[in-house]
Image: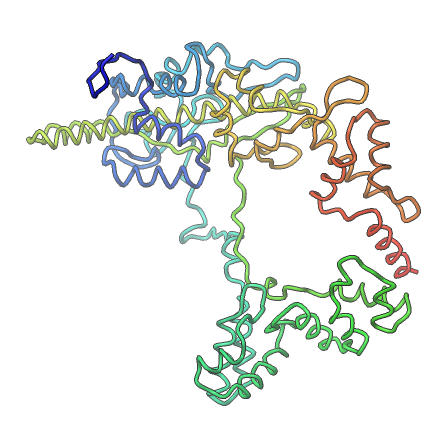
Length: 536
């Protein structure tokens, strides 16, 4: 055989990940906020797309003429290992009757149901006078667009005005504003105010001053003695403990504010490492106090705030908006439905498309208009496919974890992605994308969908495996119910769990206890004893 460069022709088959297909797969793992942001960008970019609640004439027509758009579900299925008969989900709210799930209700695949004519499914007053095109929400009971006429109530003028929690929280005084108000009363000299302003600007979120006074004096071009004097006065401001350079100084400032900073406390603060293991005998020796006084000092230090600045500066936490609702039926079982308020409602303005397509003269303009129509059709299909997949996976999760919904964490079953993927008929990677950052509202609270996937711990009697989350809950309950005379060690916890049928190792119990932030049995015994003495 000759050695050298040559050209060969080979014929192979491979799945081509087009940009649209890649984006469709990416839509599965987007959160509600990310999805709405993406839809807003598409609305700005595509003149043919409109929101379903937007006024304007929309012509009827078959928007699925493009074979590339029609085969989107098939392409996603192929990329994730779905066969031709793979069920994506029931477009309507799924009812679970405990023992069985209607599941897919006879869906034929990803393509057919997505081409359903939804014109008679929705009742949107804003577009009732004009023919409606396709909409990206899932059809069926519980997913109607509904009446949006009062959607803006309380956001503008009028008698009904609602103040949201976010508006109330965002109006809270920040730490810097709180300190500035006090500083303006404390200082009169401009130089002192200038230094005080600089000190406030260089506080971290916890209220600590990390810069050295010498560096501050050099930066401001003043005497370091003046900076130290201003800092000493600023350290008396509210909240106690601000402007400290380290943890010890922060605790000392708070004790001085309470008039509790005596030599014994000063010695304890200089040896804070003794509090890590709560070495009471060593604390008694270092501070020169009795055991009762030492335990009282430890309790007093625990009542202080090591990060006083966090009481003011914080970010408003965005409320978790569930993607799926689970409710109990009157006759037993569960009803699973999507949160229709989170589903973007889009349509294609066929009349506007016809007008601009007729007015276009250049070939480039017609190509651009055609691309906009194709992109709009694809986006509507992709959003519908995403909603169906989320509903299908959530319905199966509810069926698998029926015991948890009925009886609590103790009945949580071990579950993995593969089990759900095999039942629903999609790939594991699709289940992972669907359950990432998606939340379900149940009668027991709001949970992330991934919460229901837990590892398995073998049963001691060879029976059904136990969920690791259920075992953690048992450990927490056992430790919370213990009293000072019967503190349970890790070995004792292992024995109790094995008697109840859980085959678990001691190192696993220790790992779970540490992960839950529960101290060791020695530390818990000391804490219980100190609490008992404080009460007595």
